[in-house]
Length: 427
Image (cartoon, rainbow, N blue to C red; front, side, top):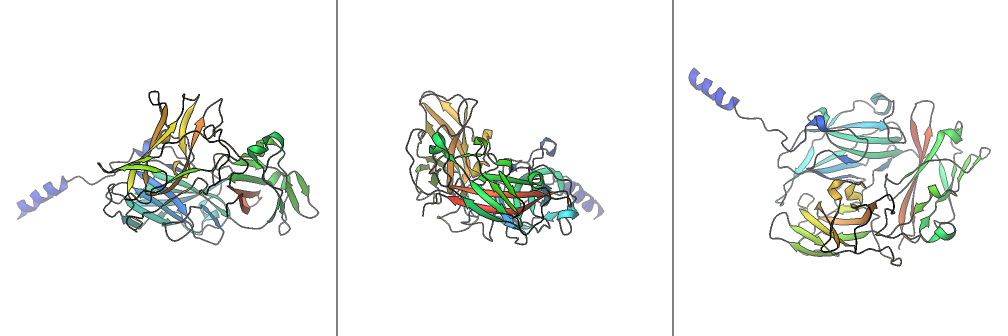
């Protein structure tokens, strides 16, 4: 009996422990306070303002006391992993603040992610994780960091979100049309802030306004100062006469409907089912830089995951989605796919290559079933980013005004006001 037990210990002692074979060494990961996936198998990262991950437009914004933000992401592996989350407080410019965890968290600051589902009979197996973001005590900028097995060096994703406390009121002024010869492509946002409920110390220096377009952080207007201060009635007036504070209207987003692989929707040319995952081909695109403005609805660059083939949140399939952009000659710069699904970044994953034989740019992305907005952007020292898309003042865009106040105590940028504006909405 003793010999048998000894042999069993040797046999089972030699069985390797399952590890996260797809992950990078955590020593190779550089921590970022931005929206980022640190491993290629972590996909479809979203923060939703609701209970269900199906059919809701993402919005990483909530009001203090309303804890309705849900982090959802997929891990493209068959086995679940042990993931934890931590909340990081940031300054208005997304640098880490000096506050300790107890300054902005009610108690502890490490949370196991225990809610998950395995995908159902999908071509690419995955595990979908969901995590309700915890309450915080202060309004401001935050990043949720997710890491493996309690090891904060082994990061898998970071995602920004903002919490505001509405202590001011806004008054809109004028329209979004820009001045003079720029009016055909520029959008301008003017407004007045009333802070009669607050005693703000030195608002010229301590109040900073940020404005962003379509929930993007890559083109945000930062540290905007008021044009006029009326301390007797507690008003700050913002009239943007400086061209650096204007936004390009750009164009409505291109889109495609991949909610069904059996009956693909608009702008999907074909689906090749000869291999799994399927190969999806989007209708070839052309430049719109010289086209007149065309009206149609979009999601302002966002996307939503959904599956009409099997109505289940974890039955959505991933596919290799192929994009084609006609261009007579290669441009002086690099061309990228852009939208919320790319985190609005110039990532090699979404960089397009030029084929001289067909005179086309080609790119691809590994995407889950859903409805996607996208554009082609150029990174160049001589061309605008919207070179292939054009820019129009009539374009429907979403703007957010963020008002930060640098208080003496705590030493932090508090988000004391938030306004969302939909301009040129197509009713």
